[in-house]
Image 1 (cartoon, rainbow, N blue to C red):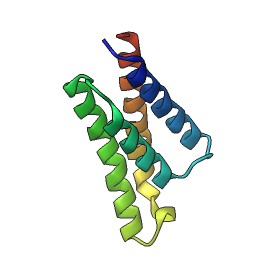
Image 2: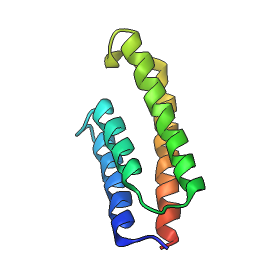
Image 3: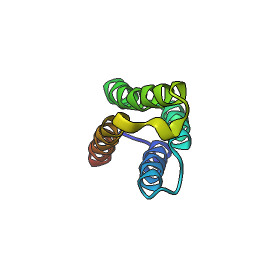
Image 4: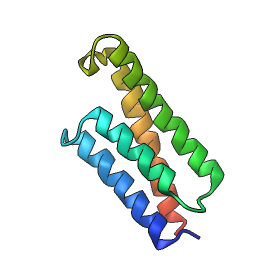
Amino acid sequence: MNSYYNCRQFKLMEERIELFEQDKINFGQLICDLRSLLDCLKEVDEEWKNNFHSEWFVLEQVYAVALNRGGIQKIENGEKFIFKSLSAMKQLLQEIKDQT
Protein backbone atom coordinates (compact mmCIF):
# COMPACT_ATOMS: atom_id res chain seq x y z
CA MET A 1 0.00 0.00 0.00
CA ASN A 2 2.64 2.54 1.02
CA SER A 3 5.89 2.77 -0.83
CA TYR A 4 9.26 2.71 0.85
CA TYR A 5 9.46 6.41 0.03
CA ASN A 6 6.28 7.19 1.95
CA CYS A 7 7.33 4.98 4.85
CA ARG A 8 10.51 7.03 5.09
CA GLN A 9 8.52 10.27 5.18
CA PHE A 10 6.31 8.86 7.97
CA LYS A 11 9.40 7.90 9.95
CA LEU A 12 10.86 11.38 9.50
CA MET A 13 7.57 12.89 10.73
CA GLU A 14 7.76 10.76 13.87
CA GLU A 15 11.38 11.76 14.39
CA ARG A 16 10.59 15.47 14.05
CA ILE A 17 7.81 15.20 16.65
CA GLU A 18 10.15 13.34 19.01
CA LEU A 19 12.86 15.98 18.55
CA PHE A 20 10.38 18.72 19.40
CA GLU A 21 9.18 16.86 22.47
CA GLN A 22 12.81 16.53 23.57
CA ASP A 23 13.36 20.29 23.03
CA LYS A 24 15.89 19.58 20.29
CA ILE A 25 14.06 21.61 17.62
CA ASN A 26 11.85 24.64 18.05
CA PHE A 27 8.14 24.93 17.34
CA GLY A 28 8.57 26.83 14.09
CA GLN A 29 10.98 24.23 12.75
CA LEU A 30 8.56 21.44 13.68
CA ILE A 31 5.72 23.09 11.79
CA CYS A 32 7.85 23.73 8.73
CA ASP A 33 9.31 20.22 8.67
CA LEU A 34 5.96 18.48 9.15
CA ARG A 35 4.38 20.49 6.34
CA SER A 36 7.27 19.77 4.00
CA LEU A 37 7.16 16.06 4.74
CA LEU A 38 3.39 15.96 4.32
CA ASP A 39 3.68 17.70 0.97
CA CYS A 40 6.27 15.13 -0.16
CA LEU A 41 3.97 12.12 0.30
CA LYS A 42 2.98 10.32 -2.87
CA GLU A 43 -0.23 8.38 -3.41
CA VAL A 44 -1.24 8.40 0.24
CA ASP A 45 -4.84 7.95 1.40
CA GLU A 46 -6.54 11.35 0.99
CA GLU A 47 -8.56 11.01 4.19
CA TRP A 48 -5.40 10.25 6.19
CA LYS A 49 -3.59 13.16 4.58
CA ASN A 50 -6.50 15.53 5.30
CA ASN A 51 -6.65 14.40 8.93
CA PHE A 52 -2.92 14.92 9.39
CA HIS A 53 -3.14 18.31 7.70
CA SER A 54 -5.97 19.33 10.05
CA GLU A 55 -3.81 18.55 13.06
CA TRP A 56 -0.86 20.35 11.47
CA PHE A 57 -3.07 23.37 10.87
CA VAL A 58 -3.86 23.59 14.59
CA LEU A 59 -0.12 23.91 15.20
CA GLU A 60 0.14 26.56 12.52
CA GLN A 61 -2.70 28.55 14.11
CA VAL A 62 -1.17 28.38 17.59
CA TYR A 63 2.13 29.55 16.13
CA ALA A 64 0.49 32.45 14.27
CA VAL A 65 -1.36 33.60 17.38
CA ALA A 66 1.82 33.41 19.44
CA LEU A 67 3.74 35.48 16.91
CA ASN A 68 0.91 37.99 16.78
CA ARG A 69 1.06 38.32 20.56
CA GLY A 70 4.72 39.20 20.55
CA GLY A 71 6.69 36.04 20.03
CA ILE A 72 6.72 32.32 20.32
CA GLN A 73 7.38 32.57 24.04
CA LYS A 74 3.76 33.75 24.34
CA ILE A 75 2.17 30.38 23.54
CA GLU A 76 0.66 30.15 27.04
CA ASN A 77 -2.77 28.51 26.64
CA GLY A 78 -1.80 27.09 23.26
CA GLU A 79 0.24 24.27 24.79
CA LYS A 80 -2.83 22.11 25.35
CA PHE A 81 -3.69 22.43 21.65
CA ILE A 82 -0.12 21.63 20.64
CA PHE A 83 0.09 18.45 22.65
CA LYS A 84 -3.40 17.33 21.65
CA SER A 85 -2.51 17.75 17.97
CA LEU A 86 0.86 16.06 18.38
CA SER A 87 -0.85 13.13 20.08
CA ALA A 88 -3.34 12.87 17.23
CA MET A 89 -0.51 13.04 14.69
CA LYS A 90 1.36 10.23 16.43
CA GLN A 91 -1.84 8.16 16.39
CA LEU A 92 -2.30 8.81 12.67
CA LEU A 93 1.31 7.83 12.00
CA GLN A 94 0.87 4.63 13.98
CA GLU A 95 -2.30 3.79 12.07
CA ILE A 96 -0.61 4.27 8.70
CA LYS A 97 2.38 2.19 9.81
CA ASP A 98 0.04 -0.59 10.92
CA GLN A 99 -1.38 -0.67 7.39
CA THR A 100 1.99 -1.38 5.84
